[in-house]
Image (cartoon, rainbow over the protein chains, first blue to last red):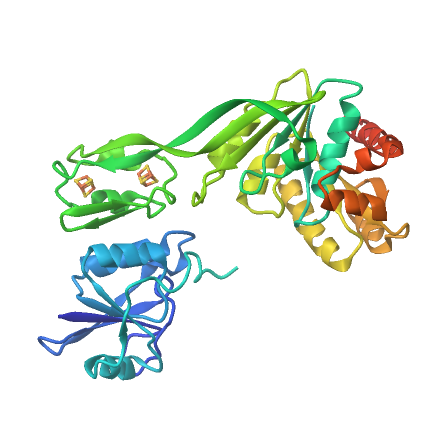
Length: 122
Length: 281
Ligand code: SF4
Ligand code: SF4
């Protein structure tokens, strides 16, 4: 299964980014092969609908789970409909978050935890 | 003439000004009051109109025929507003994001998309004594007000003085409400915060090339900062409305200033004269 982590950079040591739709990158870890890739998220500068567009990006990447800080209702709806599991409450860097996930210490979210537009600046 | 009454932020007493102006002017000529604050209309609370006519307003949104859709993903790719998400075997529509551009239903290679009506709110019309009254009410949960604001503004008639109550702030709904007016009255308070918001509103109006003037509400008689600002930006101060306890109490109870104090009719007639003077010069 592919696990995506919303991150500020492209490597395991980069800090996570709590904002789902506005994060710069996803670091994607494939638990079957152990491979690590990074996917740029172009939605950061979109004026609206960043969450939907970002969720679509993950659907296209065929990820099975995503580790995030916050996620809004529209993005959550897409992820949920696509069967992508959403785990909340990540902290620190990408590596820490993946470890917490493996140790089953992250919460599986059943609802969005921020309103839409929460990640917009200004 | 089309006249907008706006304020950079809420709570400046904008509606008491727009309503008082409408009531005063209706003694002399035909007046229509259009409340464009469709998210939180409150003009009716002060004017108490009898609403006789109601019209539902819809915008077009895509509907997907899952039988025809092969999940190619093209619609989500071309939608500039990210209103669509294509999942294997399931295409989701987010109507509140859709701008009805028609891209998806015109270009879906499988012709799986048809436009359907999505009701966003109502326009209600009636009379409040001599004032013709129109407002819009946006349905709960609908994020997109511009099409409803457009529907309210479409009720304006050329042979009337149209007074448009503009939603507070300087965001898209406020811009849509003032677009196309001949003049905009900006209601402000003589405080530093008021000035900051006033300046934002002035900048927007300059960009739209709409002439404007300022009404200082709850004036302390000095208003130096506002006057200095207006002098610097060459914006006329059209009227000063004094701070008055009875009027403030009336406002809280939903009674417009000019009905609390009949003698204030003069203030609002003068205001209108000033506006006409500026517009015709
Ligand atoms: S473009 Fe048409 S066929 Fe392709 S995913 Fe969208 S609705 Fe389905
Ligand atoms: S009509 Fe335009 S804005 Fe609406 S979903 Fe289709 S492409 Fe997007």
